[in-house]
Length: 126
Image (cartoon, rainbow, N blue to C red; front, side, top):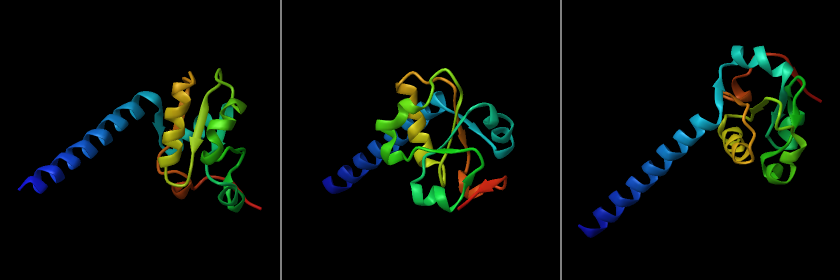
C-alpha cells in the first residue's frame, strides 16, 4: 500500500512540474502557426536551435544556426532589442531556448508550432 502512495506522489509531482513549465512557457513566448511565423520572421532574428548536421540537411531560408547544446554560450550573438523567432525539429528545444532567453531579458520571443517538421515554406539545404 505504501508503494502505491509513493507512485501516486511521484505522478503528482511530475504533473505539477509539467503544468508549471507550461504556464511559464506561455508567459515567455508567443506560439505562432506557420502563416503567422511567415508574416514576421523576415523582420526579425530567425534562429534554428537544431544541431549543425540537421541544419545543413535543410533549414528555413534566412535562418541562423545556434544549436541548443551551445545556446548558453552563444545567446549573446542575438540582439535583445529585436524580435527573436525560434524553431527546432518538433518545438521542444526551441521552447526551452525561449525560456532561457526570457530569463536573460529578451522580451520579443516567438516560436514555430510544430517546428521544422511541419514547415512547408521555402527551405535551403546543402
